[in-house]
Length: 201
Image (cartoon, rainbow, N blue to C red; front, side):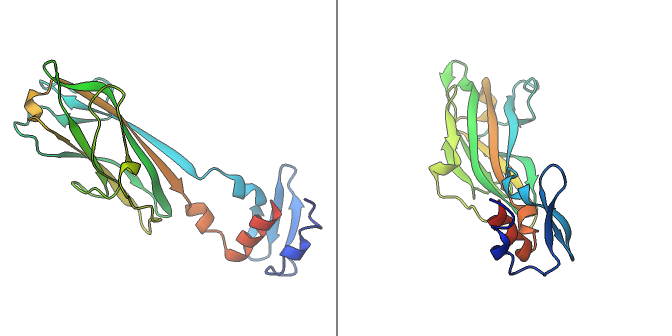
């Protein structure tokens, strides 16, 4: 679409706002906000966070794991780990917990259920979903979870609760994937410029 064809969409902009090329992409020159690349609409707002989690068995932490649960605890109370902090203007779009080493008590499979929430013990995004056999995937969409855009930076915790005592488990590891929709840059765009970006590309 040519710039002339888009002229009718500029009625919310000052008359001295112009569009020109910087040799790479169209750029809106706004008298107040300065240059703004129109290609911003196509920037990918999705980000993936990947973590590995295991069970510390016999005082030996899992090789290469980002986090580990204490395998010496003689009960099956939920343990929690802080995974990350999501920025303001983002939302947790999806979450997955994949079992990469089956959970065992000696040779017997043992269930482990996971929560994911904004504080230790919370479950806004995932609540008591199992992942304990090899390649089994717990998904946040197994339950109704919040997809609100975060008004402030927010911590994300994972909690795990085995059916047996932690101390009897002899194996268990997982990969955790968080898919985040980060809209902070888009939400920061002034409304009149956002209208041009939506119309011009």
